[in-house]
Length: 382
Image (cartoon, rainbow, N blue to C red):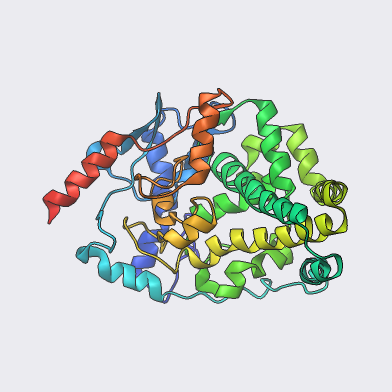
C-alpha cells in the first residue's frame, strides 16, 4: 500500500518499514534546507537530483546534515552507527528484521520468455561457439580485455557517472562512456542509470525493482526480462536525457553491440567472435548481475543503512570495486567505493589516473578527515 508520500509501506512489518520508507518525504524536506548548496554540476533539476541520489538515506540534522565531498560540493550525511564489520548492537534487531523481509512480485512482474529468446540464444552461442571455433591465444587475450575493459565502462560509466554523477567530465568523454557502456549489451545509459536510481531511492522495499527480497533469480536477471521494466524511466534521468547523442544511443542500443562483435571477428576471426564477444559478454552480464543478487545478501555491514547492503571482498574483486556495496549505499555519490587502502577499488584507481590527465575531474569522495573522525567515533563509542 501507499503511505501518501509516494512510498509503499509493507503491512507485514508495520512501523519499522513505514519509518524506513518515509525517507522519500524526508528527502524533500531536507532538500529545502540544502537549497543553498550545490549537489550537482548545475545541469538538470537540482531538487530531483538530490532526491534521486540521496532519498533513501536518513539524514543527521544534529550536525547540519552535510558532509563535504571534494571541492565545493556538499551532500547530506547519513548517520554513522558502527564502523565494525557487524551492525551496532542497538540496531541489530532492525537489521535482522530487514533481512527477514520478503516481497511478492506483482502480477505484471513476469518474465516474457518470447522476448527473452535472444538473451537465451546468446548464452547457447557463448558456450557452444568456442567448441566449434577453438580458443586461440589472441581470442583469449581479447576475452580478458573485453570482460574487464567493458566492465570498467559499466562501473565507472553507467554506474558512478550516469547513475550517481560522482565525477564530472567533458561532453566528448561522456559520449565515450556511453558508447563503452552500450557495447556491454546492457541497454542504453538512460535505461541502466534510470533504473539504478530507482533502486537507490527504494532500496530493499516493494518498489525496488531488483531487491533480492523478491528472490535470487528475479534480482539477478528476471527483472531485466520483464516487459514492465523494458523502457528507460526517463523521468529519473532527465539530466542526461536532454543530450540528443545519448537519446540516439538509447534508441539504437541494440545495434551498437553488434559493431563490437564485428570488431572482435575482424581481430581474431571466428574464435574472436565466439570467445572475445559472445562468451565475454555472458561473463560480463553475470559479473554485473551478481551485485544485484548477492551484494545485499553476502558479506558484512559496516554502516547501518536503511537497506541490507553489504561489503564483500570477493564481489569487489570480481567487479572492480562494486562489492563494497554497503560503503556505496552509505555514501552513494562517492566515486570511490573502497574507503580504506585495503579495500581494492580498481574502478576508482583508473578514474584517479584519468583525473591526473584532466579527462575527468571533481571526483566526489569522503574526505580523509571524515573517515578518520568515523574511526575515532568507533573507538570512543565502545
